[in-house]
Length: 380
Figure 1 (tube, helix red, strand yellow):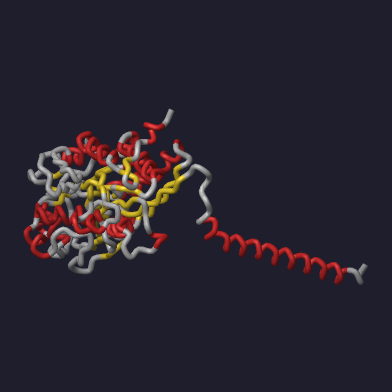
Figure 2 (figure 1 turned 45 degrees about the vertical axis):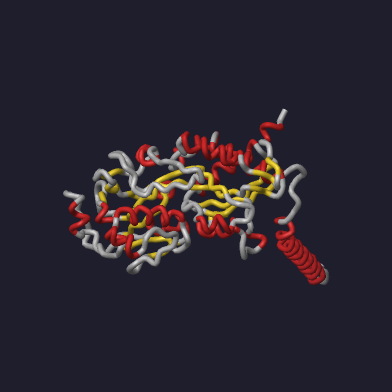
């Protein structure tokens, strides 16, 4: 028996070595197959729509696209929340790698006339949702609601107000014990429609901001601001940085439970962000033919002062009827059934007056030189 043990151990070692080698080879084969799988042909009768852009509506987009797929299993949707500026770039498609080109973009700053002129096959800007840009802060020692006047929040982001107990902040917060600590500013590092919406308001309410910066998707912020990518990045950085304040989409602040300031509006009232206060701000918006409208300083005592629409960017003409139909079907659903998901996620449904014009824009999408009928028209 003793003479067989070494032979048995050797055999076991050989078998185990073969198993390890085989398993490693399988893993390597799987790793090599990933790119091929990513490029695999879709199931017969299916279509893939690719999009990229704004992080502001990404929470709602994720919900929409998931729910839509449940009832439209042949439509696959891939959306990259890379920021409004990058979304516009990929949508236009000039000097963009083939794998980055998209069927639709998304932006909270819409597109400029110059960008529209560069868009291959034309461009339609369709407002799908709206929301508030809030000033979220992290002051664990402060009890009660923080109020920021127009002078206070513009001064903070101009780098002029640097301490939390500055008299300009204290004036609007009687009875609140503000800390004698330095304000830590949190801003976006990437091109952002959220930045554009916020700076549109700063531009409207502050002559100094208007003369030095103006509205922009990317700002060289004064002072030593902390920078983060995307709304989620800004919200996360505020959440872990005491004495910080930053601008972020309301839905992201609400998602992780950040405190948000009540801001002074055009009528001199301090208003907290909510579905109602954002709806009040958007109610008076006059929508032009191209659907590009900015509500930079809304009127009304109950209006929250920093609001924005968020647009999906579509081509006026797609190369084939399948893509045109799929795009039209998807975003028609978003404008109709999809609006019911807005409030629960911290967004504002688009007003009926806006959705009517948005639906008309979808109807104008063509495939090549011919108009494309709605799928619903061809179903029996």
